[in-house]
Length: 263
Image (tube, rainbow, N blue to C red):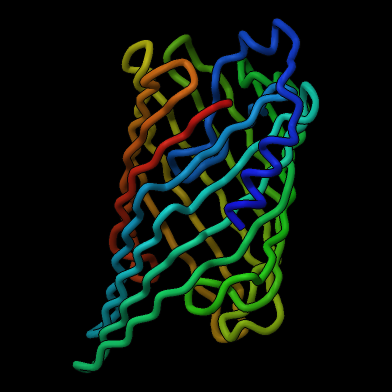
């Protein structure tokens, strides 16, 4: 899968219009929401989670999930449309229940999609996009879902000032059933505020509510997130973040760090 992602990146034209070259780099990570901006034509963004750890305690049970090198490649096709390819190469899940510990090391699923910007593809002012996607069951449970799924994300961002940005990200999915066979309705919404601390560093605070109508039992999760992104260079961003569960259905805590590079 890594070879496929690399080959796709090599096949994308490297030429772009002069005004596209001046478009600010706009990675999709970090955070819970999704930016409405798209990559300029001929440009490629490779965005990778260096490490991601999630802790979920339910009663006397505990689940630790570690994901390494979860990667998304965004490829600018036109001034307003980008293609997207994602894959989780390695996940480690450790379950502890009643003194019994189970551990599984698996690869995850692949995701294919695109983002079509409807207004301001550079993300300035009021920016809106449509982002449909489909997940392919190339991984194995418990990291992979076990069947194909899909969904639609509608990223919306608005500049409240030169330093403050509002983001709203509704999403509706055909999510894979917990038993790995079939699909059901799931939907969520993210509201966040991004604050530019200086020319290279942005702090983002978000809240997300998720509703999952799995046949085994519907659940609602409430999550809060704080993330910090540092644009180390014009084409390189480093980030860290944390997510906290605000109700009993949500995982207790998630910690992650990542990198994004534009080519």
